[in-house]
Amino acid sequence: MRMKKTISFITLLFILTGCEIEEIDLIPTISLSSSTSSISIDEVTKLSLEITDLETEIFGIGLRISFNENIVEIDSISGISKGDFLGSNTISLSKINNNVLHFSAIVTEDATLSGSGTLFEFDIKGISAGTSVFTIINDGIFFIDKDGNEVIIQNLEKNNLEIYVYE
Picture 1 (cartoon, helix red, strand yellow):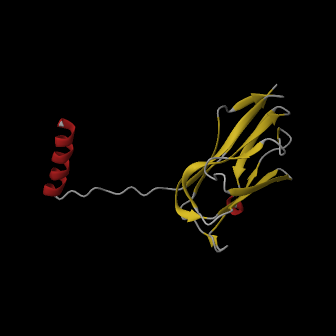
Picture 2: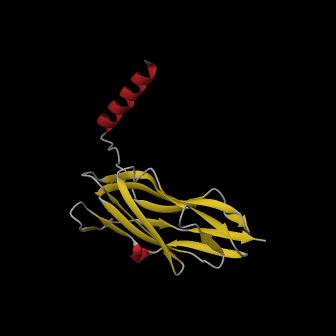
Picture 3: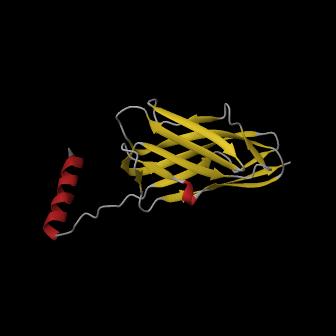
């Protein structure tokens, strides 16, 4: 009961003093993450691609991530899986070609995607010593609406990831 009175008092204070409650603009972000920044040769770790604060509703996504295939390899057959953001009613495709992981997904029913969550996860394996930077390619990100039109996400931030492989 005391908490309720405190909240009511603070709200009344804002009203009486003319203070405005500032709205915070959410910045949509696509980020690569891992539980570790370094692995040994032949060690495997999981990388995740997360999306946060996507307010615009989308029907599909396509993107590309570059990496150094002389340092790490991605298991393209069993090592790439959809995350919770995409849900069960999507079809996804992935392909690795010339140091680039291509990923796309589209909703299979009359629904859209927005909010935050994991787009996909993939396993990497260290194959030689060095550093591989996993870079979300700027001109390689595409969002589409349910009519198949490209959707431009304003102020989209991208956070890349560096993995060091040691002997």
